[in-house]
Image (cartoon, rainbow, N blue to C red; front, side, top):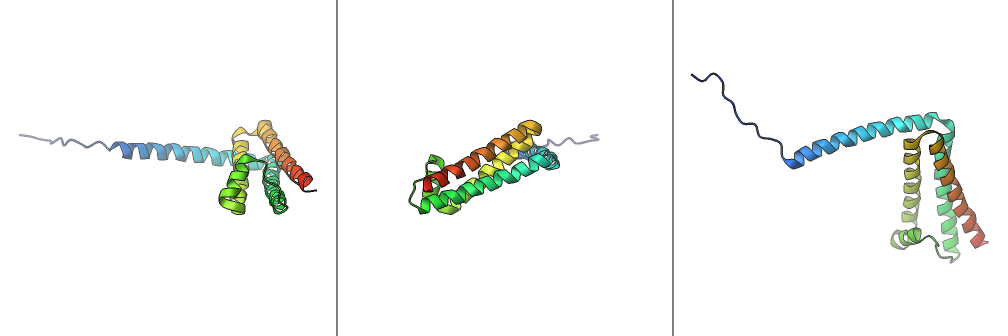
Length: 137
């Protein structure tokens, strides 16, 4: 007499296991990043530096558009390629992406190192603005 039947269970396929594993890793990364941004926003200096990074990048975009309107070529090869391919909307997206990358790295680094990165990004952004205005003037 047979009291139990053992049916073979089929193991999930490779893609299903990869998706499950990747989704778990991504969820853990997002949770860590959210915690890092909470820590960043609790640091008042770093939070203002993130705002200054965004403002400096948008000011750089505005001064670049002003220089382009006065027939000056874009000196940054990456920005020149973006402008040639996607125009002004591409330039604005590029600047927002740069500000986002800086903000994420500031959040991941935290403390003085994150603030130093933000300060350096602000200097570079406003340095580009000064250069663009110098070229135009």
